[in-house]
Length: 574
Image (cartoon, rainbow, N blue to C red; front, side):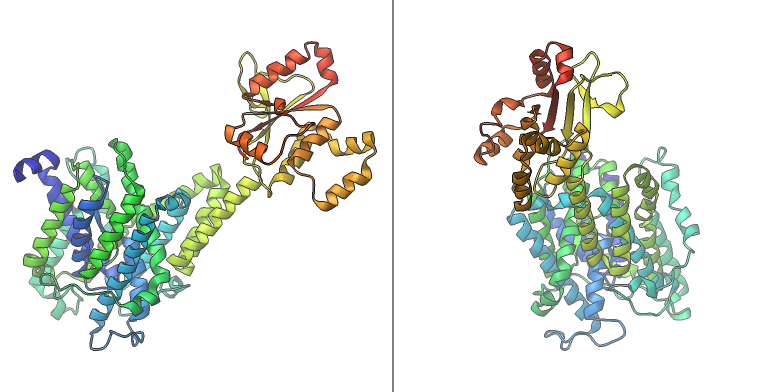
């Protein structure tokens, strides 16, 4: 049965390649979390097992994610710094610095999972829709720079404490010396069409480095910092520290959002590609339970492992059984052969982390495209990147989200209104600026409102409508009805509403028609007593073309049509 399942659902090479990547990335990302390398293997095992039972994605590979690891590391180094005493937290007594850091990481992961679980129970999986692709791109690029800087001390073998928080990035100098190393990773891209499976370069480098370091005794002869003693089997479960939870809850919430957003986005890509559905709320529950369970066994924050997910999908993995088998191989490494990785120089792990940042760092190439096609998205990207780079990832995400919501408000409050015209020989109406062969009857103006009308943009729409018509109905109304005193009083009291926009035109004998309204809008207008003796339901038409046919039928004589004036407003939302 086991053999038939393996043959049916996964390829052997898939399990082998993915499993190797599991323990290499797990070791490397532990450095980002400021933890001993061995604990990254826990993150590659426990959350994957729970996700197998609760997750809805067939292709997602669960494990450590570099940005989340870095965010966990920021909390760890804040509460247990490298060069000073730890925070005054009950439960730290009698623990070594390593044990204190493991306790902090597992506690913040537990509260992160609790946030995800609560959001899943409240059915708020839609929250990731507020994280646009532009915002995520700017955020992850800044995170990649943070990760690059954080790994310099391991790659260069320098002895300086980790720095986190606002402006932390300015305290470390970047050196451009990774270009030669990164060139080797281009092999997979260059020969992608000829390779049946990607070459596990990270694994090859790890094996060679371990062998050379052991053979020449790098640790004693050259004072090279190595991985050192690996975890031997699994340790007993631990409870989260309540004081650590209290200290890290504010940082754990954005971690929960980022972890879920990245995992859900990746899962959605593969679900669309392979034609199946995923449930965002169930994914929140799955990751919440996975992180809470994993934290009890000393793992740190888990999300999706991008490279492993890509390998698992591209080499034939079709269900989560592939992930479970990979996790089982990690189990073997932890229990039986972990000691073989003890001579591995930490500088190699740091270099592997940096190499895996290539995709995120290359997102800088999006900027010229955004500048040319959408300046608003360009601003969102730059603001998110700069804020995340200099203020830290948690504050940077908040600033980026605020900037994005501000652009949404601006787009809603100041949309691009337009005048439409009929494309000759059709019943289609488009912006008259975009076409040459159009029909636009004299005396008829078709005004398109592309955004919902609400209190903040009513004055904007009124000004745009007056500008499109070419004259102010209010001024004409003043002259014709001699109602200057009444109108001034209405303006002072703020009593002119959307219906008064309409009535001003009707009182000076300008016909107004509203088209393409949803049934919901009509119901809402009735509830708000919008209609009266002057504004009737007969001014509403289902389509723009129906309104035009009515106008032409009402004024069959084109000479008569030129003497009247008609305004058609296209309103789809309110």
